[in-house]
Image (cartoon, rainbow, N blue to C red; front, side, top):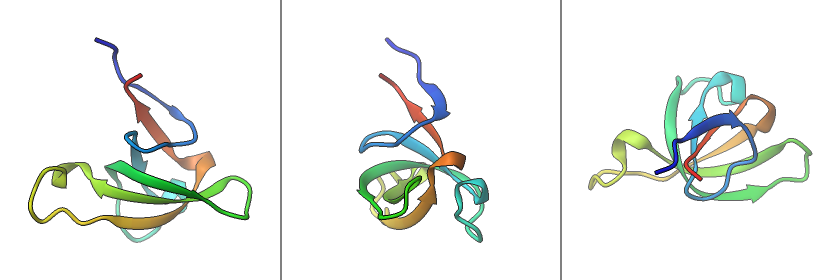
Amino acid sequence: MSRPSIRYARPRAGDECFICPAAGVPGVGSWWALVVSTVDTLTEGTMYLRVVPLDQVGSADARVRTYFVRLSGLLVRRTA
C-alpha cells in the first residue's frame, strides 16, 4: 500500500487538497477537500476546483463547492 504524499502540485480529480488562505481562498477557514474536477483558467498558476470537504464525503448532506485557487499555495495529497 502506498503512503500519501503531500506536496505543492497541480491537483486532479481524486486528489485531496488543503483549502486555505495561502491557496488564495480567504474567508472559509482551512480544511482538506476531495477534488471532484478541475478547470484551467486563463491566468497561469491558477485554476478552478470543484471539491467536497473530506468530512462530508459519503454523507447525504455533501455539497460540491467551487473555488478559484492559486496553485503556488495549494497543498495536494496524492496516494499514488
